[in-house]
Length: 120
Image (cartoon, rainbow, N blue to C red; front, side, top):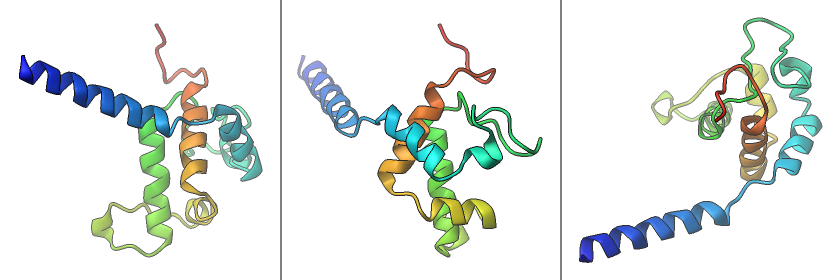
């Protein structure tokens, strides 16, 4: 019984922590536009200007946040062991983003309809 109570308490704490930093989808869309992400990834985030540029709409939010932070670490010159991504264009773009921008953009992109996502 104690284990069940501890598990429930832990779940409640995690749910509360997740809700405390809830992303703002409208702010995510505004940041996507402000930082000109559409110039490469398309206004709908799924019609990129080059086939090698990824479709962002419908990607998982945690994956997008991880990727943006890895580009930011790469632009900051972090060592390769810090899980970095090095790309001159993306590095310059994400250097401007705050943590809230990253969370909001990722949440907005994840909420978009896409051939990448299967919705129930």
